[in-house]
Image (cartoon, rainbow, N blue to C red):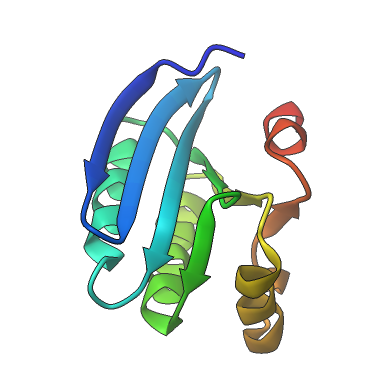
Length: 122
């Protein structure tokens, strides 16, 4: 799989990489997504939408923590992607992050995949 990085952002606790994979924009946050780091994820996700990508795949395999602020970032971007005729797909969530989505019921409004490859294959 060609994963030429299109962009990245980083703080001490969160790094975000973005690349294009066919018709999808793949966004990989690594570290902790919370009130202090949420904009580091929001900006690249919204940037992908601004570039015309309506299918966003968030590779959660390196996302170690997500609080309500991070969840709200993803929900907000999902609404924008849906309005543009696309969607947000979440892939490879670690158990701690998956638990937040399950407890809040947010897992019911996203398309969730076990692996990044499965998300890209759909």
